[in-house]
Amino acid sequence: VPVSDYAVAPDGRSFVVADGRRLVLGRPDDSEPRLLTDDGVIEFDPAYSPDGSLIVFGRASAEGGEGLGLWQVPVGGGDDRQIELPDELLRSPRPSPAAGAPAALLRAPRYAPDGTAVAFVDEGGRIGIVELPAARLTTTELHALGSPVWLPDSSGILVAGLEDPVDRAAAPGRDEGRVPPLDPVQAGVAADALEALRVGFLPRSGTTLEETALGEGAARIAVDEDGRIAVIRLGTAPAGAGRLEVAETRDIAPRAVAAG
Image (tube, rainbow, N blue to C red):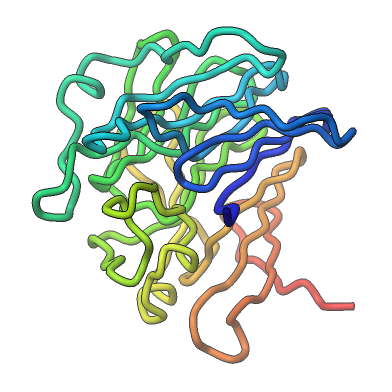
């Protein structure tokens, strides 16, 4: 089946691929892939813990589609375990924007580089940071169209999204039994919405999303160990669509990276 998402271990010794329903663990030595997802559940949005020992992901019921929280499983084998979160996240998740849809999923869990917090997004337009285990919860509103990305000092996250709900009618959805990717292009977001994307910064100890100088239409964020930020400029403008740009910090406008 088509791969919609993937993650690679920090040491490069394993990787996990996802199709919106299942997670499969592989290794570059061509050893037999291992199916991680059990019957009765859907799993998605995989990532590795900072030390590479765990794979963290979102889970939902295969029967009803309701969110079942965030989970992790040891790379070397062993039982999966639910990440301990504040009761308010698990007891009453915000409803999905689609009328009649099941309870919203918790998505795109990403460990802080120091391993003591997890960032996430959900379908209800919320992004957040949870101090572990199940301690302080920081949330703010943004309809995320991408996974949160931590700064290397674990001080906060960058995330791309829109202030208003997004029409994803053209995207393969949960009614087909799988979870569509958060990536804005794969999710079928309209071109005019892509041009309005913005990247915000949520401090680990803050309560509001801060503006950045990364500009509109920026998505697919990556951050290196020195804190430099790479984005892809999306939209329809010929001079900007698909362009790779790099910024030294979130407060400095990015520059285009010359091809070749």
